[in-house]
Structure formats: C-alpha cells, structure tokens
Image 1 (cartoon, rainbow, N blue to C red):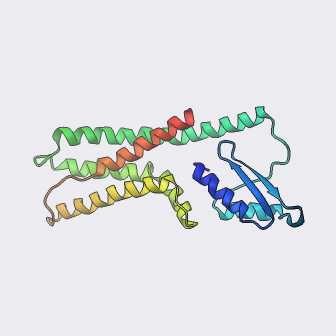
Image 2 (image 1 turned 135 degrees about the vertical axis):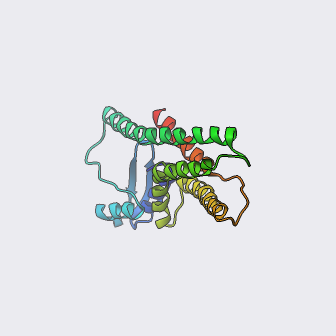
Image 3 (image 1 turned 180 degrees about the vertical axis):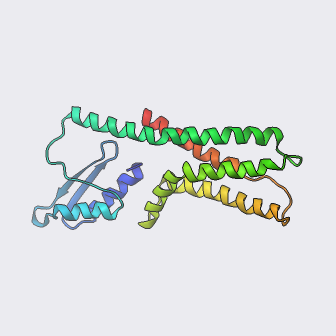
Length: 203
C-alpha cells in the first residue's frame, strides 16, 4: 500500500466478502483486523483472494505481534520506501535543475538549435526512469477501476510531456512556429514529488 487510498481499497474489498461484519485496515502498520459473523465465517483463502483482486498481497498473522517486532517491521518498510524514492528524486532534480537554468538563461526565440533537443532528451529520460514508479502504480489502480495519488501525477506528467513532444515534432517539420514547451516542467513534477515521498518516508 502506498497511501491511505490504498488502505481504503483493501478495506472495501474485505468488507465485500460474505461473512465479514467489519474490516479495519491500518495503513501505517500495513495490517488488517477483520470481524466476522460466527454463522457465516469466510475462509481465509477467500479473504486473501479479495485482497489480491484489489491489487495487493496479504498473509495471515499467525501470532500477536509485539511492539518491538512491529516497530522493526515498520522501520524496515520505511527504509525500503526511502531508498526507492531517494534515487528517483536525485535523478529527477538532477535533470530538471540544469534544464530549467538553460531554459531561463539561453532559451527564447534566439535559443541555440541544440537546446530543444536537450530538453526533449532530458525530459524523456526523467519520464522513463523516474516516472516508472508513478505510472506502474496508476496502471495497477486503473486496471481495477480505481485511482490514487499517482494517477494525478501520471496525468500531469504525461500531459506536459506528450504536448511538448507533439509540439516539438511540429516545429521540426515546419508545421508550427517556435514556442515554449513543457519538457522541463514534466521533469520538475517528477523530481519534486519524489522528493516529497522521500521526505515523508524519512519522517
């Protein structure tokens, strides 16, 4: 689960299983507590299948977890999340900042012929490498008729990049006058939001 919306999706999936009276999903602990009816208690495999159908994986806690063990699990999960977003924000910002500096210093009507190519290349690298985490999460949610926070990021990034790519091609073939593209903005969105995810995981 990547956000509270994910936890809500798991909770709704569990509550939709026949025999489940109530389900509570704790996002921070990545644990679900289920109250069932004695007269129609669902099989554990059915509950796990419901979680799987919602796009997540689950397992049964065979014994009560002590606070020490729970803290260790949470810390390991947060460290993994921090590592996941750390290289993404470093790469995203390393691409965006130079592009933005070049755009504001030597961009404009008299810009060098190589600058649009560099903007296109840098943005495309950011979209492919940094954006992959966002796009995969959004795709998994869309497959199940849901949206999440990564859906919004993906729409914004792909809109800026696709519009800029179409405009770039039209300018190259002489079908459009030179004008501003949004390649740098696509990289900025990915880098800054990845930085936010990393700070959140670190916190």
